[in-house]
Length: 351
Ligand code: SF4
Image 1 (cartoon, protein in one colour):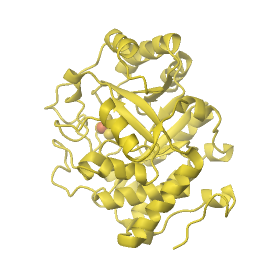
Image 2 (cartoon, helix red, strand yellow):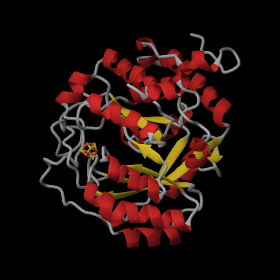
Image 3 (cartoon, helix red, strand yellow):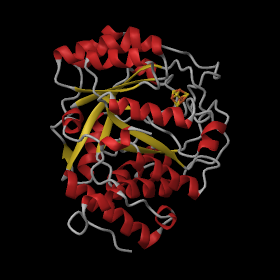
């Protein structure tokens, strides 16, 4: 199978290259060819630079009820927390790793934490550091969203999770799919750089539904997109389901890289669960170009229950070693700076 390079076709043709089922299901030499094409595409567009951001998980309260997440509101067995903005600020000012250029402030969908923790933290970080500031906080009101932007955040991470509306409903993903995608378009029109994402290998998501994820991603005004392997979470209705295969997850990442050479694609920490030992590095070799160091205070981490309590934490040492092992180095440019130059096509901002 031949894959185009930026030299061989126009940028617009590459934008439209939705993968095939055969690519997503590939193994052996076909899979190797797919991953090599993705890696070559990443190198061509980003060189050997990998973005490195930190993440702080500031609240595990959530008003949503996604079946694939341990922080869903129906999980009454979870100790809920909201971190203190001042303590996080001190840690980020005094102890953050030198290699991070951006910080992502993440929480369940918890407007109280946004008001009490996130906005003050964003404001202080903006005033005293050059960090790019991303937030991943769910679907908030226009007022709260604009306050975040005024405080200094410029990147919004909001995954559409899955593109099949019926399955979306069945799994109680946030709101409705239509509301979610309309919110993404609204955020982009408000001037946010949007990184979205979807889950690979969800129960009930066949190959056709997997392909829908690509078509939807391509139709949205994004600057980046993640692929997370489905991991059956403790204390969720899907606890006894089969996890996503590493192969499918990596194939989705590689296909996404080829579909959108310009997007920033993270290597998510769950690759360590889908493929213990080498899953994370293989993500970087399938076209990912962003790593995230977890800076959530240790005593809070295990209650940020996306999957299970024994989390695999990507600390500074693990991230730097993974980047080095694939012959790359941390970028000195922040994601926020890159995104200032990478505005999405305006026609994608309206439904
Ligand atoms: S995935 Fe996000 S929105 Fe859904 S329950 Fe978990 S924290 Fe809440």
